[in-house]
Image (cartoon, rainbow, N blue to C red; front, side, top):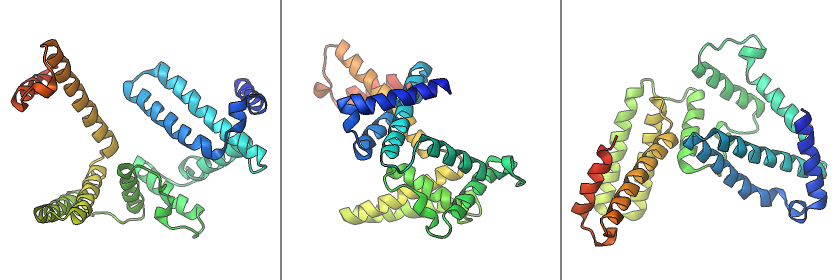
Length: 253
């Protein structure tokens, strides 16, 4: 707590004495916070714990920064932020701080979503809790997860594959017609169904796609490096030549 108090004192001085820190607003910090979140995500993906520690510090700085601005506006201070979080955690974990039973992670999540709905006191819909600014893939996953918590889900997870096939066929029909607008709509439906399938089988679609992204990048980097070592450029190679090296990249351990 002593270190945290020192951090708050540093923020007080920065707001008073640093020209850049002093002119920041809630709005100006928003994009910087998003950037810091992605840097934290990258550190996690790398498995670099030293870097992860530094990035967590950067994110904590933003929390303290927002709280300081809130205090200046006489809206809230860091104590309010911490107190509200503590109360929220206790309220949404009645199986720990109350007498509700929840023996599985699924039961915990279901209780969590139901309690979140109660917190809204009927003023908001279930899906209004999904941030509008989320990336579409993550948003689709959260939408479906919240609907599931309210009981709106497939009775058997295998049923989702019929929906995937249905959406794939509808996309194929529009693809053959070459109607760009309808193709986009049907492709969106297909993606949504695939995200639903991933959720039902315990796969995080964002993690799955990022895994594929990294695999592709590693193989393409290998292709590019091998090409340079051979004194050639990708632009001058045929697809068959590139695929030969690509196969080597796939077979590497």
